[in-house]
Image 1: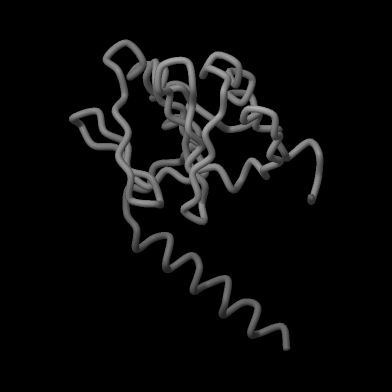
Image 2: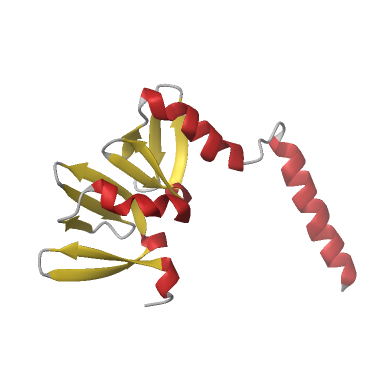
Amino acid sequence: MKNQEDSIVIPQGGTYYFAQLDEIVRIEAEGSYVTFFMKDGRKLLSSKNLGHFKGLESAGFFTAHRSHMINVAHLTSYSKEGILRMEDGSQVPVSRRRKGAFFDKVVSRFQPVDNPLQVVKKMDLNIQTLGDLG
């Protein structure tokens, strides 16, 4: 295991699984259980409810709905219909009451790009500058 601070223990009956936080794409509640959807496609079922893992919000996770928590690092898009698309292709709804929190806590962390060509030109300028150093 890499680093304890970047890991979580997932209880499943009498077994405890250790997972790196960056390997978790999302968590979905199913009654009093939750399923962890992992980056490699595995699913881990835990005997704890979603509230048990609420502390993950301080580690880059966001509760999009009462039954869905996502790892923001694996988020690829948000549609105006309130659907989050994750890197694994899954779609997660954002509840109406959580949309404001989504924009405050997630979207506001990213710098909007008005003109993507400016970013490419800036990157190209940095590459040329680095080439001139040699």
